[in-house]
Each structure stands twice: as structure tokens, then as C-alpha cells.
Image 1 (cartoon, one colour):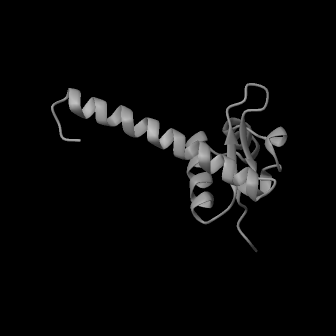
Image 2: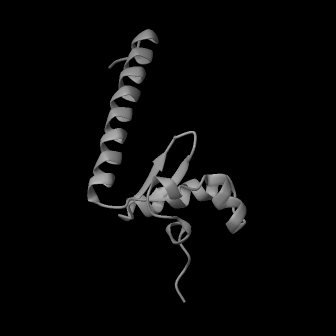
Length: 97
């Protein structure tokens, strides 16, 4: 018998997004267990995307490769912004860049 995955409970496309709390409540898991499982599945190649849209926040399976690429592009932008913030704080602390 196969272990259940978080992706088994996700809908396809942003309109079907489910929050980590909804998933946790449904599966009887902690919020942290859900987010760890999602990261694990993503790293195994499962196309789990996320949206912060106020109407449909949460996680969902990408509908197609283009949607997944768009999500990856958003992650790259976030990564660049986080790096800029880290470098500025390291500089303020007198650390190296």
C-alpha cells in the first residue's frame, strides 16, 4: 500500500488551492508537518505551486508546464529580493557580503 502524499489532496490550478491549515485539519497533521511534506514532494519533482491570492490562497498542482514555469519565476524573484535583504543586513552588521 502506497503512503498518501499531500499532493493527493490538492486540486489542479490556483482556483483549487488549499491552505496548509485546511490540509492539516483534513489530514490530522500539524501545519509544520504539512509544509515539510510539501517541500519534500516539491524536491522530488511534484509540481506543487502556491498562491497568496486573497481569494484563493494556498497550494495546488500546476495545470501545465507554463504555469509551473511562471511559479518558478516568482520563486526566483523572491530569492533575489531575500538575497538583497540578507546582504544589506550583513553589511549593517559589519559582516562580509
